[in-house]
Length: 264
Ligand code: ADP
Ligand code: MG
Figure 1: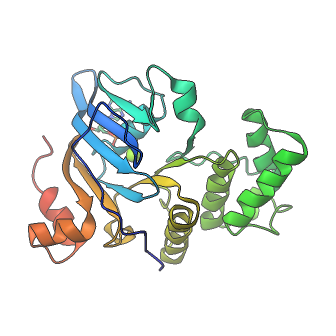
Figure 2: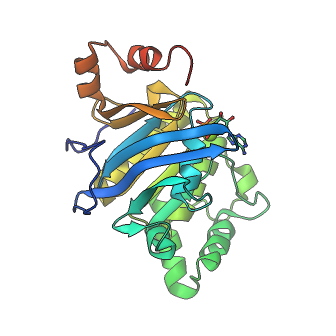
Figure 3: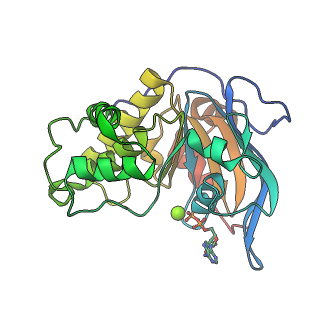
């Protein structure tokens, strides 16, 4: 499994009102509750441009709620989110124009071919014609799906279907990629390949990535990681630094330590 990223430091939990060049995403004091059930509390996080950040948390930690807030599906009840200098609440179109999202639930049309799925999605983005087709070809090649255009999505295995979903959101060349448990249901090989492909997008194309997962094996020492439990961030930073600071041997031990006991 290829798991490497540029070794740049991650600055977290020190949000600023001023956008700095290497801070792609700024989340400040975010809060959200479903009725009286708090899902996120005082979440502050900064993502460095071009880095792979794993949002690691057990089921119910609040990962999908954070994704929903970062994509404008939900409105924060407190705090704010800025994507490349654009506040989602005040300027959602500009913020989301640079964002590609792959949700937890798969949304392909299995009866369409690979290229038809891409073309349909491009049309929803207002892209059509020769240029759109070129961008589709480039996105498919980027995710290792060149030559599969005429196959029905149904005939792809789970890993390739996920890659197609990622290729689809690459059509409009996002600078920020947000993936919610993209490896759910995949076998070990498919998971490793998907993680490697997305790391390639960070390394080669400088795409800032937030990868939500509950699987510690998907995180490499050089990755940035934000550990979420019970709606609160428990640790943020480069994994290798977190391990040495906490005196833990590996990410599994660190995760177990930070997520033991009641969530509240
Ligand atoms: P994760 O994606 O990490 O599994 P979620 O964001 O889905 O976590 O859920 C965070 C918390 O919010 C959980 O306690 C969950 O039960 C609750 N929750 C999520 N969605 C809803 C909803 N639509 N209505 C009520 N509670 C919800
Ligand atoms: Mg979820």
